[in-house]
Image: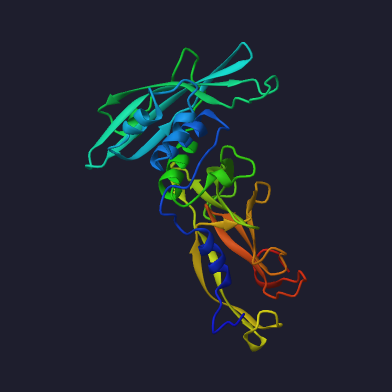
Length: 343
């Protein structure tokens, strides 16, 4: 394969995995009541009414055609979920989930509805075939004049509401708003809630005996390819404002002998920096306050780029970057930047 001029490989790897889809990414997740309701409205937004219809234990309409007809003038539905209460009875877990939706019609008008969904999961350990997954028993939503952000009920059912994590909810709303059409949560190998970490730190100008400040870091799965997966991160500072993180990322000039990637690397250097909101194959270490990434340029992993960002004075700073640009079957990275390892 011939290359002419500059090869911005790291940028290419990230951009290829973050291309937006023309329609909402397919989500079919029954791992929690919240995930199932989001899957329900994902099916409605994709006009996959048979899938939406099948999430109910009791049909929500006289027929699938009648159910689909009910959404004939609906262009899009935004959904907010609260925290589900639960109780066990007769070998099942019953959930009550606060839900608010904003339905946007094809004529441009909008209407907000709020209420509760009741869901049930029969104990998987005692089920036989056919297996019955978590499903919706019923949903009761009523119109409201409140905006979507304020319409969500505090609780549903008689059980006391679980303790709410307002920052996590705010981060989840931002993730859905910014990345709902880009990321594909259905690709997770282990579906679940986003990871959350409390970071204790001081600014450089703080006194030596100053009390520690606190920030919250949230990690959301975005997408998975053949051998790379991406995550996005959000940070809440002392003012509790949740903002998406962008990370300094070197732009590379990689030159191969005779412009042939199977040949040895002739020259490799950093020619500038950009910022990326996606990290590839990343993880966070709360002990060292470091984020690391390792992007494979192909499946065998002999060509790759790796970065390390450390949390200092309220933000993540790029402190190390290694690149293995040779497609030679060997793992032999070259350190291009290192403010982390020390002398």
